[in-house]
Amino acid sequence: MLLVDALGWELAARTPGFACVLPHRRRLETILGFSSGALPTLFTGRLPEEHGRWLMYRRARGGDTPFRGFRWLGLLPPRVRRSWRLSVLLTRLVARRGVRGYFSLYDVPRPLLERFDLAERDDVFAPGGLPGGSLWDAPARLGIPWRSWNWRTPEPESLAAVERRLAEGSENFLFCYTAELDALLHEEGSAGTGTRERLAVYDAWLGRVVRGGEERGEELRVVLLSDHGMVDIRRVVDVMGAVAACRCRWPRDFLPFFDSSLARFWWRGTAARDEVRAVLAATGWGRWLGSEDLARAGALFPDREYGEDIFLLDPGLLMVPSFMGARELAAMHGYDPAHADMAALLCSNRPIPPEVRRLADVRAFLEAELAAVAS
Image (tube, rainbow, N blue to C red; front, side, top):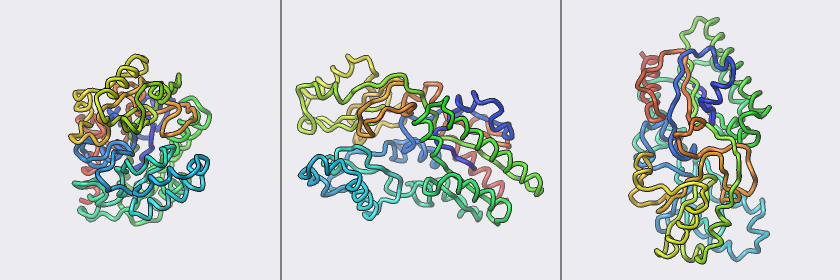
C-alpha cells in the first residue's frame, strides 16, 4: 500500500498512462481541511467530529497544552521570537512533552501558542494512535506480520526499502506513506517539472512492484491511495490585513487562527464578532461556514474547539500572510471538497467495491484485503 499525500484524482487523470498497472480506480471524496483530518478519517473510517482530529491546531482546554509557559515568549525581542534557533528549541521541547504526531510551529505567534493545543499528540500511523481503533490495529488482530514507513523516512529510502522487503522479507503487509509530492505541489503547482517527474517515479515504482510479484509467482495485492488533491493558486489575499483594519483587536477582543485557506475565530464579545464577520464577508474572498456546512463536512464539534466561526476561502485563493507562513505558494489544499481538484484517489490491481466513494469508506476495504491475506 502506497499512500501519496496530495495525489489528486484529477492530477492523476491528466497524467497519460499513470499507474496503468492498477486498472481498478476510484475517485474519493475528501474531507474539508488538511491531512491532519483526512489521514485519521482514512485510518478510522470515521469523520473528524467522531475521531476528534480535524485541523493541526485547536483551542486549548484549560492548561492542557504542550505549549504551556509559552506566553512568556512575548517578553523576548521580536527578532528572537522569529528566529530559526528558537523554533528548533521549542519544537524539541514540545516533542519531549510527549507529542509523537506530526506538527510544525510554522509562523504561529509564539506568545499565542499557549492558547492552542495540538490535536495529533499520538502517532496516527501506529496501533493505538487513534481513539476507537484504526487500520493499524488490524494486523495484530489478524496475525499479519507487517512493516511501515511514513514521513519520518525520506521517500527514496522508503520506496527502496519496500521493494527490498517485497523481494526478501517475510511480511504480509507493507505500507509506505510519503508527503514529498505534497511539498512539490506547494512549490511548483500541478504543471511543475518536479511534479511531473515525481509522478513518473511513482508510475515506474508501481510497475516494478507488480512485475516483481508476477516474477516471484506471488498473489500481490497493490493499493495506491491519497488523502486529498491540490488546487493551483491564482491569487493571494491578505485576510490578516483585512482583520487588522477593524476597530477590534486580537487577542484582546478575539482569538484568531489563520490557516492557509481557513480563518478561525473565538470571540470575547458580539461587537468584535459582528465587525469581523461583516468585513470578511464584504471582501468576496470566501464565505462563512454555518452549522449546516460543518455538519455536512462531519466537523461540527459541540465545544467549537476548532473555531466558533470559520471563514473558508474560495478555491485557488491563498491567505498570505497567515499563521502557516508569509510566502506565496503555487498550490494549496483545504478548500471545499466539492472542487474537482480536491478529490483523492484509490487505485488497485484488485476490484474496488462500489460502495467505496469517500475517505471514510476506505478502511473497510483495506481491512477486507488484509483479512483475505490472513486467510
